[in-house]
Length: 510
Image (cartoon, helix red, strand yellow):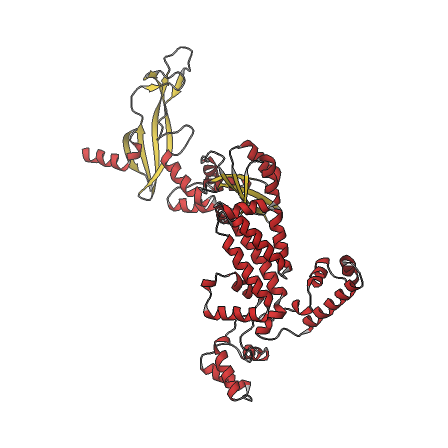
């Protein structure tokens, strides 16, 4: 009998404050009968201890599963009489840690459910908990999730601010984190300046605000915390430079593409040259840009792009060739055509077929007709050229470095662009002297014949104080971007369920 009592105490150690009277197995259900110990209990009203019993009540609560079977705990609790005159007449005793008021689950089972719903929310948590022999509905799972306490909202010294889409192009929200510890602080249901300003006024203490190039957030911080330091995000600065680099590379594709296959001379290139001539003829007659757009039935931005180009070849795009199955045999095909210029295409097809070519004959013929065998190297797209310029020089392979040298030789503007890109990359390592170095970089950029880069420098001037802070202080907004990435995963799990309240709860629980 002593061994049985010891085993029960070991298995149900979480119920140690109770007196267990019996355990029975009822068709896959473990039922535990217990009662509260006969000791004096303090009145919740006056605090006077009493053991005078007025009556008894039965409570049934669920406990954690045992041997893959549900456990139901039936507890007989006492209703006690308060001895203090004027206080409550009777009260039902509670056992913190075992029985909670109005709950049908033990605290340890509620904690187990809370851990699952915290990660999986509604339907996913229900499926996982059913495997753990815990039965509950989707609505109950969401209520358990919303019942989990949130951490207190405290204003950090360095605040990270960014927005994310609740419904793309329609509704957005704002995430606030501690940029130093990456602790989630709060989620606002809007990305307007008024919402952020109200939050900053209600939570003083922020000294530095890390943000992207948003003018809305900048205005909100200026209005609420005029003494706070604003820091732009270095990743967004590099991303903006990458975008204008791609535009500059595409604008000069008619020049650097001469290092490979000739530019496209098809109908699209001919149309481009004709439109360039029409735009510049009208501009030479003193016609304005907007009037040119109306006469030629073009958009204003298109007319501006044609007006900026000094020659039509800058607007002619290089052919966009994607990697094909024929590329590994290009060297062999070039050598065979040099030895025997009149070799039939069908014979070449059969020869590379014997060497392992798995593509079709039509793909092979199209590869030959595009001139990709006879040129010195396959064509490269503007995006790939931009990627070569934006890659760290130490990370380039020998072939990529040779390709970049050929492009720079064919187009002098690419030499200036490559130098400016590498110069700006050096500024992304925070240092006290970077503000002065940025002035020098902007002067060099404006002296180069790179119009798209000029627009990038004008954007830096509009937010110069925040840019200087980003390049001189170690603070950045990378943690906020990471939280946004996790938020997208959360939204995919619970799309369309329970609204913004549930989403905010899961984000802040982390």
